[in-house]
Length: 323
Ligand code: ACO
Image (cartoon, rainbow, N blue to C red; front, side, top):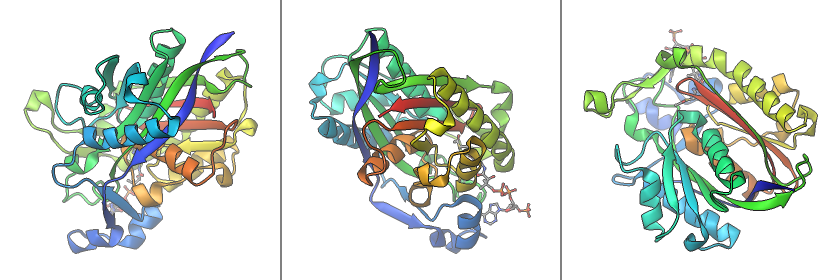
């Protein structure tokens, strides 16, 4: 008998304001056709003035708790993936804990940029299988609109804001790939590539800074590293790409999503795609896509779901879940 971290609830939140590609034509030398063709993005949501990462995370968490039929007091821990926490500290996770009215348990943030949700899932899984926690809220939430250079057409058209959340609960399994829950995780980083994607501010500069990216160089790393980490995670779980029901990738660029699926030999009918409506929401993109994928009726109990993501660091990883 082994303990497995089983997904028992999903939820998400998107800010009200929707910005279509055409809006950027007013202020930048860009157009809807370029953005669609190069990235697959058609629109994205931007947080309202004063709307914060922890507020969006709290909304997503409430929706996931409702889906799981649980109260905040049932939760032992909150793991929140974000690179855009409201403040340098405390963590956004502790702010969510307070907003939910949780007086028990513990909460912390995980920062691995766009790979953040894979890292958060791996951490939450470790807390559950080690017996430290039985029920964990795993959240990805971002307000990347606050770290954009609005004069840089090569980055500001790509990102969006939002939040997604999962509830993970400890359940007994047999230790085989037939078990429900997280079956394997695979995490990687290589700090030598830090200059490809970073924010040029922070505590050491006493400014928030804006995102800088050498997009085409990140692109070249993405497909190869994503397919490799997904295949490694599947192998650890005792599975192959032929067993996959759904790939739920980080939603950065439709061409990366298609390239990775093709490299793995998985048809696009088995890929959950939300990039057209959300843009790149960094650590929020996978839990958003998982929640939307469930709402659409794509992901069902018993399905093998593979999530994979890459981002600043570079940091990348994959998680295999039997839903
Ligand atoms: N509108 C019109 N033209 C543009 C725009 C725009 N919005 N942005 C760039 N261009 C131009 C460039 O200036 C360049 O022109 P030039 O040839 O005259 O110099 C041309 O388009 C091609 O630029 P590339 O950067 O080579 O275009 P590419 O096909 O690589 O697409 C993109 C750019 C969409 C950024 C792509 O490289 C990409 O998706 N990269 C990966 C991003 C990613 O996955 N990041 C990781 C996650 S993010 C995170 O961790 C926070």
